[in-house]
Image (tube, rainbow, N blue to C red; front, side, top):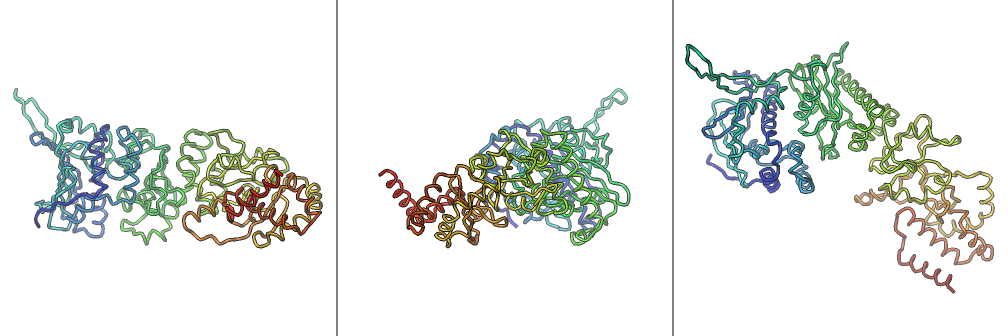
Length: 627
């Protein structure tokens, strides 16, 4: 095979340009990323060797070696892990196999990337951080079990080359041809300090040849010794008292590729009939792709310190997918597979244990660390809400963790269901809420008029998932949750309402007859005080906001008739009643009914049925009123 020159994909070229020219601070992170990648490569080989010992080629002494070469101004990161074939090298190093690449680049454009180096790791492109310190990168790799090696090389100029190479053993050597301003990464002390800072917990020895001088018989002798730079003790197996906050934070950054500190650390050992160790983190910032269908979640699963699975989805419910970390069990077989996991009682025990621990931790944060919980909820609240839909048995527990803006809360402040219950009116039996696109829109909603007048709090729901998950909650501590835009709500005195029905009954029948093809019923409204009329659905109907969202996404929404509610205290109906008493079959009554229906459509946020016809009839009425 001759040397091939290949163009980077467009998005990779753009990324490399940003790496080389924009990400100046914290250059040292390149070494952490390369060592982490080397550790992952060994993890993969170690796992595969459980069923195919031949892949080890007789060498089970795993390690990562750093080689400084001042003469050639290079730094090499070498591992004896799984290695790559030519095809794998082209795929892994020449493309970014990630659905969110474009989103990543768009975000870089919109942020101050010079002050945001964490984006490199956050988006899973750590290998390219090498170009912050190198003007050329050479990769020589041979996959375990294969005879042929390959050489991949690029100077971040928009292309890379691949060609055959000689390599006597499996694994990967990444050779960085350092820039003139990156010679500090030839310094033994500098390298040692970076490894200690970022990679001390790596399970495999990170070694480097170190020059030592000794006085012997009056002469100075120089010797070169291989020194292990990291402690290699799995951080999760240490006692909590032995681990500093800085060490927890660095390990989080290692496993999550996030360069910000976690919001909360959960570290414990379960003992008894089932023994396992868990180290979990609640991040401070949501990954950009957490709402994507192909988002990988779940703690890493270890068995006796061997990583069996990088993302074990069976260990966490979907609504807790923001949690990062790992679980290490001694009771699972080393050759465990995804199929075995699905019916494994130990996995069920660990999952229940982790779920309870995470929810308990969030409960404690909400009660005692309000600022931290506010940060968490802003980032992950809408994901946590999914638990109302997916985990019926825990819906009240999850409901207690929810935060809301409401018709009473001040700007930037929140309430919760416990506070709502404490502030309910003595005779109030239901928890009222309204869904919509934004707070400003909801505050002006006509559906709130009667609630505002009577001082009844209404919760504002603005997340896309609210329309689906809040009905799943149903009730909280015996109080039913009720949408203010659906069902028959009457906050007035019943005797007063009956008297109004008696006075306007004939008019209601005429309006209903005129609109019989458009609405299922016409009734007096108990929610309006200033607005003329509105449309409402039955309790089980889809909310109009949800219907508009689904239609905007191209989904078919079956049309269903709604109920027209009119405001019995509005002066318009006193005048219509007079007209109706004069001529109940007047065509004007029918025209008014049609205008009322279209006004109600506008109130709920929809367009009139026939805008031009509606405008024409409205203009006619205006002209008559002026004569």
